[in-house]
Length: 155
Image (cartoon, rainbow, N blue to C red; front, side, top):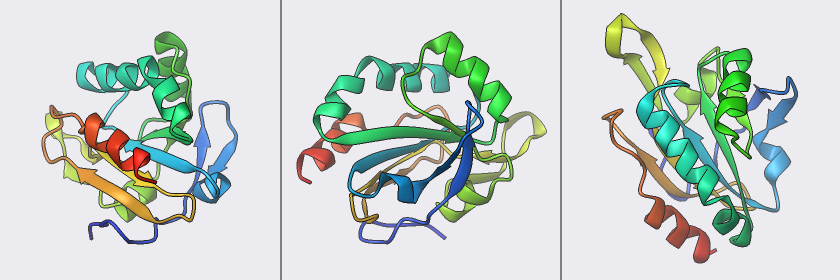
């Protein structure tokens, strides 16, 4: 199942790297960029999230928050967040339910791994409606940040 623009975003309850539960519903009233990424500490994921880090004020000025989700444990995500000084929540989808609900899920990934988040980006508006959806098949590709910002500017 893949989500598309106009769909209600599936709510989720995941733990962040500070061991606090985060719900998508917590962001009602604000726009939120929801990023899924395959694995912490890998080169493309690090570059993608550091690009978001370096541009975080642009997203704040567009009245949006950013969350990033992977199937890594919250402990791994905590170390990754600390090392890369990421100023937004990293959420652990260790049980893979949220990745599957968003259609952002590899059954089979590299090195014989199963059940890894696909790199993808969603813009969810203040009412919980998806306004931008991009699910990438190739883990080496990165989301279209220009399109994400353009979507946020239109909200």
